[in-house]
Length: 581
Ligand SMILES: [Zn+2]
Ligand SMILES: [Zn+2]
Image (cartoon, rainbow, N blue to C red; front, side, top):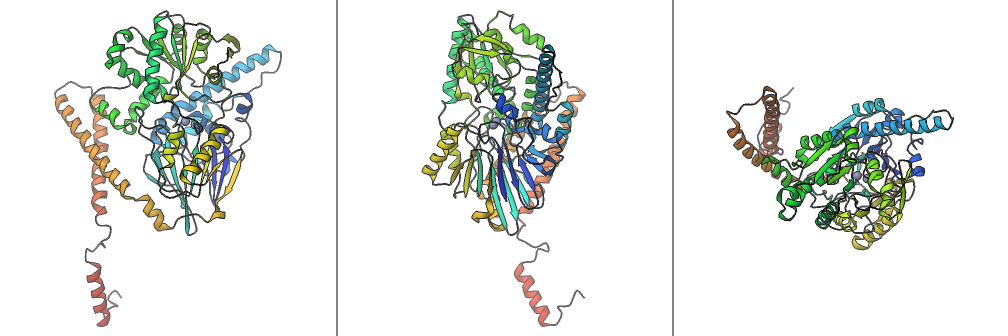
């Protein structure tokens, strides 16, 4: 087996790796490069492999630096399935059309520029909505923890990565001959104890690990500290008559910010009076549909958030929260004098409506710009974090007079200690841990720490690299694979989930009893009845599967092995062993 690292090898963005066996070529992620012209030029370059040779794609999550080149892969001949979690599949329906839209707009803009120069306006977007539609047809949603045979020799399991909704750490079991090699692909690893999302799942065993290293060289402050800083910034800025601008991707941090602000608008005595006149605008055409996706995928939320929902409190909504859908509404925000917080995409300030808000607000001292996510080198966001005094926004030079804050505690990525904590989950040393998705010093630093702390082999990947795994003799037998797939904790986790469902149903039953006799629409009754029908089917199937498990070691006739052997011996002795003939 070969593991080849094609993307996210020199920087954080452009995640793309391949697993090649004698018979199969599997791609892990197909992300876009972000951060400056040179890097972004790689997006339209040829793939280092033939797209039609790729059998399938396994996608870790819906961030553009992991999925953004999928439509190009399809445009250039890929026709196989794209496996991802069901929440990622839902998010792709929003993210990929948006990507195509941004590219179509940028191309239009560049062509107009050419025309003004007197040149031929012949630029074409990297891909368009048609390519996106073809890509979405190939998406195969899978649930967390399900074992999926993607072909006769490769099995995958998605585990929660706790990074954004739907993000997955993938276990791949690759069987060649007598040997199974297990590869773990982390995608992006999230932080523990974050709102809405569950903690990243630790993996106990692997032959090879492909691991992200974004914050491999430093710690970021805690979520709590960043949150109290954010509230201080909001108070200070609003009191001096300014606005607070927060660049954030429509998916992920934005929903967490809504969740946290919801808490303060509702429950905090100190801020309650002050905040009641401060409006929060989620300025994104995607934000409403994204929030719908969140509501549809509440099964992936952490316990606390699910409990709130079952109690009838929507944690992603509060009275001062507004969604601006059209660009006219977005423009009105820049002329409206009332105090406000604007959250807009893109998170790295390199595209989208945030650019307009920065153009209108950066040059005024009274405003604050709050960075809440990782800023790749070369992006406008990174320039602001690095303290540039003048930047170019939408082709115009703008002075940076507003206060710039960088609150890393909101980051969706585990920091150095978070990454080391995740590595501590391995109970036996992996043959090798390959570090990708980080700047050079982050990868090198983390590799050193992993070697020192755990004594594990760890290789930072610099540039396109291919590793032949047949050379080191690692791998598991069938029995070891079986043991790894069915350990005691996994069995307990399934039982706990059944218990959790039981409790939720009890709560719901109480509400349902209260609701009987209330007037509801036929549509709502149909929605509820459909979900109940699915639940009923699921419960029966679960019942059969659980009771069947107790019979695993018993043959179907129900006679004991001893009795059968005895009868067979007696029959043979009496010359009756040819009974069947
Ligand atoms: Zn990500
Ligand atoms: Zn990433």
